[in-house]
Length: 439
Image (cartoon, rainbow, N blue to C red; front, side, top):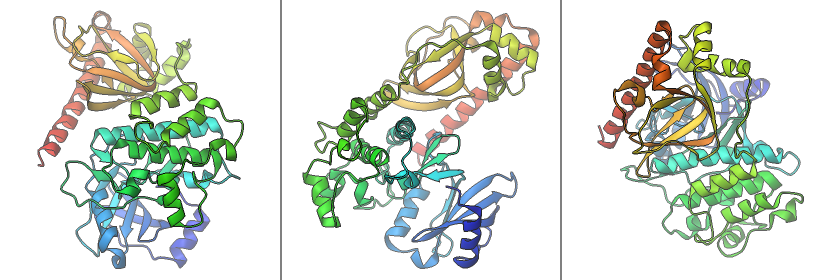
């Protein structure tokens, strides 16, 4: 969750709400913020000393819709693992006096701060923010989740520019026994479908993110209404106010993207996240061109990569000089299902999506590898899945032949790193199977 000003936080904790009692193995240290129904605290895992955010519902609010929202969000603990989504670690929604969610602590600011005309972010940063949020929502949809409450207040930007989507309390979950909440969302960002009650799909979140893009670019809502009735009527029946009315000088492409995301007719709106993301990448100028990178930069990137955490300096140099340095633009294939494979990739930057027959299997982050079966088995293995880049990806390509030519010590460390990666993937796969089986 976002960080509050230390002085303001101290005042809140002293004058607004007392500190809550510690929860299980988490020590509550201070109040971060106070919402309509819950308090958010900064906590510390007493074992690992890792910081967490703890959202605790106030007992007087633990009935009705708010309780259902907590139940929905709690049901997603451990299920949405993506770099642009706040991780939910643990939850308890069955005890009215002790309802809480423990989540990843994110040091940053809600985008609500940057949604007024006098405090807008640079256009390039806005485009990148929306792109990252789209990556998160695309992943969530692949996992059977529609957010339904996409708005600036639910998007946090860390100090390093990484965006985190949070608050899935209004989410619509497919294939779930959890009670779904009707009419969920925030009016200014709700799609026409949400207001008319028709069945929702991913295009509803695309519309909402389009409304967020509009707000971050202009500081205004997509409509001009004095009350909720008028706002609802305009969202359902009238075109949004042209972006150019509020802000001149934007590129035609960015205006086109915003307009298309906000189309009321589903046929005219973006049909899927892939199409929306492709346009966002093009608008941000990140359709990658092969770059020349000096060896020192390569070495620094490898040294900070968790895959090489046990390698000595001289060993990292050995791997670097025996590998191909590869860069990929958004939506480029690293591996293709059914093809023969003779090399594998170690991801140094960015992330890739693993799919089989169009179905998402996994998202692999920097620090891990893909295609390692080509080097772990004899013969000429066939790729078992397609691997596609998400945004800019930098990777080392190592062929089976070059792997066998490494020094003995490097071979040992490489084998250990590959087995560690394989074990983590198998564990994640087993957890997913158990989840699908309801165990």
